[in-house]
Image (cartoon, rainbow, N blue to C red):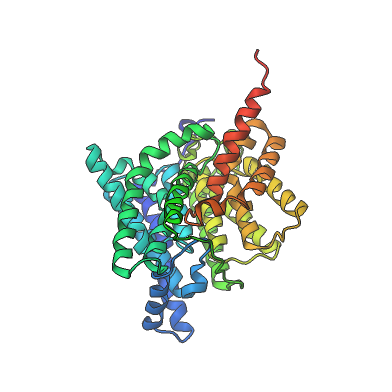
Length: 425
């Protein structure tokens, strides 16, 4: 069944945009209200927000731990508003990749991305379009994903490796450079994994991050990953996630009352880039799929005793976002099981944030399971688990999409091997 065969209530572009706008708006009001209810003030929120902006943000820097829940929610809201403004300003069609980009950037605003370190990358992307004499709307999505390297700006600015004024100048220049080159590089990097790694920008960012980190190390400036993570669950976060996921489900059912009955149609798609579910099955089933992936991700984290800290929330939101762009229950499940099995085999604590992140983000390889079946998907998950725990040192933690980098390597090696065993008809 194709999209044209599915009857939906047309809520229009502005309707979807307003639905997305409610998410950062809720974070803004809940963040302010949470601080006031708990005896805080605007000054305390500002203090926490300042701590977030001035932190180096290298993997893994949990903003909930650095600045508190209220300040983190404010950061999420502001980053969300900026991206919605760009979507509206350039009249972008809200398709699968826009939804994936928006939710991914929103999720990583819980750790790694803030107002200061994303803007130079956006500006670099804008300069690239001026240089190439094309519209900024053509690269906005790539630049949104390209903020994976935003910790490089914060690391150079605030880690004390250079004089403060020089550090900020170098950092902003580096961010502009990243934004300028991310679009042309990402299109070439797609050839490495042939579209089987959904986080293509994560792979591209890993390459750029490795190059930049190597340059810094050549000057004796060492960039090392950190581990600043909140270790407790907050009830307000669980409540908000449940509200968001129920909201997506209700929105999907309002658009398409047959969404549950027709949900099986989405499971037939392999997920390989580019698989835009909003075009293939419509907004109704797409929002339902995003909702179901969100519920499953949340319940998994809680069931194993995990904590909903910044990095884990980034994983949950990213899975939800890509529920519009390649991921569904059928092609995600084998890969995630492969990661869990490998983690247990090697003696890792599956409730540790790093392992939960690996499970959630490993679904970048969902197209492999969708194309080659669950057994190969399971194998891809095992290989991903082995690799992702070791590649962080290469880029020093400045690439927030470390799993995308790992996924790109796994896909670029595994796919040619599978093709080698194909028998020609």
